[in-house]
Length: 185
Image 1 (cartoon, rainbow, N blue to C red):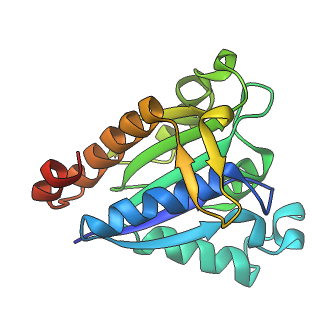
Image 2 (tube, helix red, strand yellow; image 1 turned 90 degrees about the vertical axis):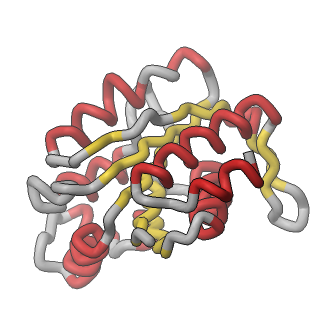
């Protein structure tokens, strides 16, 4: 099956965005994919701040992008756009870092006023990096994502179903197991 890089562009250690991605990573693993999580906030700050393309953290992140067949990009939405942290990483990757890749864009935010951030802010940048295919993405409201005291994640039923559909479409685009869709969908 495919190798998938699951990238969280959230600057927060307790991010709903990152937790949601790790939840979707489990679904993709159940589809037979090898999933590699990457939290951009864990990369060396000096590499991102000083745009150091040769910093080992950036070289390592670039290698992960090269290795992946598919990329899930998740970001919180701030001021109607994806996070500055994600922007910093994307700026440091090679121009065509997504060449030949299938990409799933996801976003979280506090208001439906930012639902178009995926299509009007994130998708054009991802498209400029040469992916073979960008699948339909999904925006999830913060209020629809809850974290239990034990760290478990729950997504409200409507958004959970929509997330499952876009994740399954992404998986199928990468050659995932369609038989699991009937069992879990």
